[in-house]
Amino acid sequence: MPTETVYGLAASAMNETAVSSIFALKGRPQDNPLIVHVDSLPMARSLAELDDKAEKLADKFWPGPLTMVLKSRGVVPAGVTAGLHTVGIRMPDCDGTLALISASGVPLAAPSANKSGSPSPTSAAHVARDFGDELLILDAGECGIGVESTVVDMTREIPVILRPGAVTQEMLADCIGKVDCAQAFAPMEEGQPAAPGMKYRHYAPAAKVTVGEGEAASVAEAIKYLYDKELKKGEKPLVMAAREHKRFYGRRDVAVTGSEDDLREAARSLYGLLRGADADGFTSILYEAVPKVGIGFAVMNRVYKSAAYNIVRV
Ligand code: AMP
Ligand code: MG
Image 1 (cartoon, protein in one colour):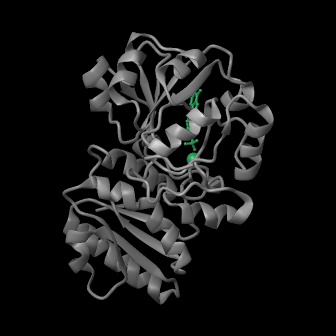
Image 2 (cartoon, protein in one colour):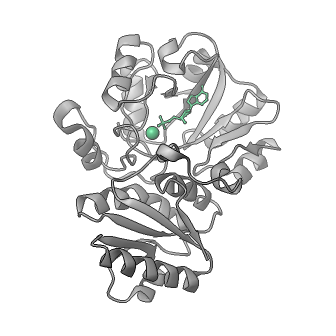
Image 3 (cartoon, protein in one colour):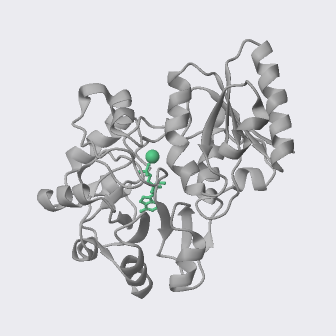
């Protein structure tokens, strides 16, 4: 099913067998809980306890790209919540999908509709590439936001963002007061090298991803150096850069992530570009970091993971 964030692989959240087929199809670890999609506040309230803060956030951001982790009423089966006493709930901002939930008469559990570990799908074609004709795909064109929902744990004294998204920490704090953000960039901020075995590699294309970060002209110099080195080694490199920086790269292959002035474009383009690079046979992606402001924070959270924290700072 389409949503405003990414496409979801949906099944009745109330049907254990259907839910377990989601995990099987995706190759998803059983201990990673699924988000439950609802079409209304009463449906959300029937599944979980919404306190005052949760009600305020629902009122302000639903339907929209915000998932709240709430105390479960025990109605949703353990397969959905990975046995937790909490359940992640959101109301997607997509009319067709809200109609689908209403027509189903049940909440729909849905993770992103990609094979586990690969970039999330932001078009029906992306879903078809991962699953072929295994699935019925509802095609609503390209996703407007392009990165997964913000996940906020509402069961703590001070709510904590577990995954950044289009609804930012500032937007949440404006609505309900203090909100923390858990370890969105932990592995690099602690100065640790990427874990062996690519422990942190998610959202990842087959191509190796390197992030260039710093002042724009210096980043371009570093990326050009890496590009030319990789080309000599027989790799097929691709630069991913802001439209305004394309000229820095001369005749090298460049895919535009978006405009410097509108980071929503970088969010919308991200997964399609990563998937497109693989489809076009590129073996190395050199990604110009975007500023970690607004939705740029969520973009860089995903880019770092797809790069397994392989970052060049200049
Ligand atoms: P995905 O379905 O791929 O968008 O991933 C769903 C995200 O929501 C994962 O990061 C989950 O860990 C998180 N999530 C869903 N339900 C819960 C929950 N009850 N507690 C904590 N995190 C959750
Ligand atoms: Mg996912």
